[in-house]
Image (tube, rainbow, N blue to C red; front, top):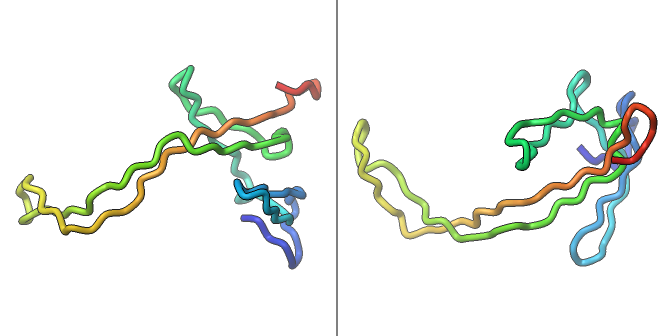
Amino acid sequence: PLAPVGPPARQARPATVVFSDGSKRSGQVWLTPGKRLKIFERAQEKYREFALADVVRIDVDPEKEVMERVWRWKEHAFDEKVYTGEAYPWRMYVTTLAVRDRKGKLQ
């Protein structure tokens, strides 16, 4: 969560979100206590976990956006799809992290 006001969580870190239009929103960011940031690394085809304290920067860029058609199963236990005529945006993003290693070096 990004909380602009209120008491910050114990492990909260200051953060600023910069939107594509250049507008900014600042506040505190944190994870659920005891959890680490989990990111899928495509090159290695596996998930990696990072402590939020080691993360210096997170960039999220749109990779692909398509309109998907809404559907449902025609009947229970049948594999025939029925499309409703509605659509919704399906978005895929690429996330890039800048993190510090145990020696404090930026990776």
